[in-house]
Amino acid sequence: MKERLTIIKVGGKIVEEPETLAALLRDFSTIEGYKMLVHGGGRSATRVAAQLGIETKMVDGRRITDTEMLQVVTMVYGGLVNKNIVAGLQSHSVNAMGMTGADMNIILSDRRPVKTVDYGWVGDVKRVDGKALATLLKSGVVPVIAPLTHDGKGNMLNTNADTMAGECAKGLASIFDVHLVFCFEKAGVLRDENDDESVIAEINRATYSELLEQGIVNGGMIPKLDNAFAAIDAGVSEVIITKASALNDLSKGSHLVNK
Image (tube, rainbow, N blue to C red):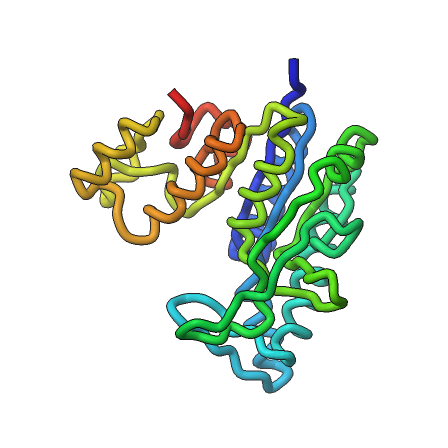
């Protein structure tokens, strides 16, 4: 029987504010069994770039990562944000280790090809070394992964944190009983977007198709759920969509399952 592994993905907004970060660290530290954290940090990168006189360019909500911006996100994601989380977790007796995809060669990516937009030094995940991550986990280390990978040619790549969490979950599914948790601003997938109490507790493939047909799931939630079910297809036990403030009770939120 596989041992349970909980992978938590949190956005930059949560880890960049002292109050929400403190709550996250406290709740994450209480999660039992093997665990790891994948985080963002976009707002901090934008702020530091402005302080350095570097313009932030976005296309459809995605950051253009030219050479100057790559230097900023590497410093901010892999340094400032990541190490604040690690230091905070150590204060809760969690033996955390901050990492990027380049460390131990755990996540290798290809630079995104230019189509209609040149995103610059942005990576699309090619391979996750699940065995290397498992070695860390089984030795008592809790990986804290920044949204950076590398191309194997000496270049760092800015990489979507949601994608990294999903790919890590897939890469570890053959070794652990993986439960992947995406923390959003809402309590889960809502039947009525204006009613925070209308959380859909369980979603399987059939339910998802119905929600799509009814227009209840739309917009940016569609690719998120598509990616979640791709993780489930790859052997992840369940994907949970919930608020970061609900980490102390993962029975809440929306549970995407293979049924």
